[in-house]
Image (cartoon, chains in turn red, purple):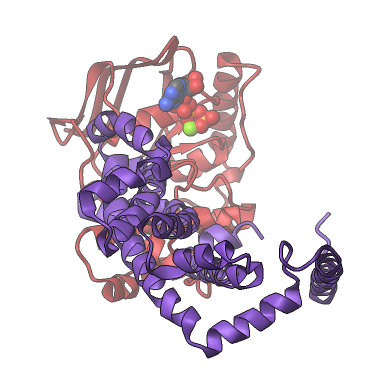
Amino acid sequence: MAQIRAENVEKHFGHVQALGRLHLEVETNEFVSVLGPSGCGKTTLLRIVAGLVPPDGGTVYVDGEPVTGPRPNTTLVFQHFRLLPWRTAEDNVAYGLRLRGMAKRQAREEVRPYIEMVGLEGFEKSYPYQLSGGMQQRVGLARALAIDPEILLMDEPFGALDAQTREVMQEELLRIWNATHKTVVFVTHSIDEALVLSDKVVVMAARPGRIIETIEVPFPRPRPTNLRADPVFAQLRTRMWELLRTTEPEETGVAGG
Amino acid sequence: MDRAEDPRLVWGLRIGFALVVLAVWQVTAVRLGENFFAAPGAIVSSAVALLRSGELMHYFVPTLEVLAWGFLLGLAVGIPIGLAIGRWRRLYWVSEGPINLFYTTPLAAVIPIILVILGFGTTTKVFVVFAFVVFSVLINSAAGVRNVDGDLLELARSYGSSEPMLWREILIPSALPFVLVGIRIGIGRALIGAVVAEFYAGISGVGYLIIYYSNRFDVASALVPVGMLIALGVGSTAGLKRLQEWLTPWASEARV
Ligand SMILES: Nc1ncnc2c1ncn2[C@@H]1O[C@H](COP(=O)(O)OP(=O)(O)OP(=O)(O)O)[C@@H](O)[C@H]1O
Ligand SMILES: [Mg+2]
């Protein structure tokens, strides 16, 4: 049974049809990437799956239950970080644990490995305004990972990172995913990133936001380091590129990996 | 475009300007006759005389007590009610009109009525200070909560925050800079309230002192308690600014 199942999901914002009759299935422990032009409804889809906004039509099921609100086993990594400006980096990372009743000091202890994982040692006591965009994004990432959710919804989680940090983070994410058996829905603008990380890539088109193609990624795991040299990789890459280009020529904001 | 300020230049200009003003004031006052236009020198000697005799403190301490009680009561009532109004929309809908009505009422105009009800004692004065303070604190506290970033509320919801944790982690820190602005405005209004109340209710406090010396055309002595009130206002506002920098580093330093 699919862990996440979106059936006929529709969402309007005024006259804008953000999502129209969208279907999506994500298996337990599957890593699915979502590719699509800007404004095609990727964030809206994640917010609906996270239970933050109700769909206007259709239903999302998680573990067979219709989603009616936020659930403790699901965490969303927000596109624009959403850190608490009045909390230090470590307290931002500890936010989820604090909400679960953990004492401040213990929560700070608990999140240390996550701070190290995202490479923010030495910045524990910094406030968000003292951090670069990329560092803020990593705080948001660590905050989500620290509560060890079963389902991780990630909205362009590496968008603000430089190429090198991005690769390190990709590896870390795969390691965690492997070790903790999470289900991941990963929104990205990078075709390469989607191919390197995912079991399955769904390509969306805009107006109304819908899935136009689902592509199984056939590479074995752990992914070979020379993946990009594989002719199949190049083939899939071209196919996705074409798909994105035909959907929304003027808006296809595909950023290179 | 961000030219560093040389503190020596800044303070040199400030002190220099103040000295020029004082000098012009002194000369003008002496020429016009000190009855109507007290010179700085005369004010200083009046201040020394009033302090020596103990008269200044005798009148100032009751005023301070009235100020402290009225102000603290204003905070104790204004902050929690303001925060609650900011959080719960129904409360806001109900109270918005009455609060604006009270806030715009010229309070000085109703002091005689308050006197009739509460009498000529300290209670009236404390109540007047309270009334001057409470609405600015309340309105700003409510605005602080209402101004919270909706994205952060969604964040809290997605992480399953309880209501107490929502207050602690998001609403209170977010409202704090607004509350402090309300308090700062409240300080100025408290001083007005205290003096105006004393003008009406009489017999004690610096308000009485000011009237007493003004009636005797001793402008220099009348200005001494005024100076004390100014010093009190400036001092507590500066202290509040320190407090704000300490309490909300993200809000002040982020603008550097
Ligand atoms: N809260 C909202 N109010 C009004 N319109 C909205 C809202 N959220 C999204 N929309 C609209 O819905 C459409 C889809 O938005 P969404 O944010 O889901 O796109 P996206 O695929 O995440 O884009 P991007 O890649 O730029 O992040 C857009 O046209 C957007 O303007
Ligand atoms: Mg988006």
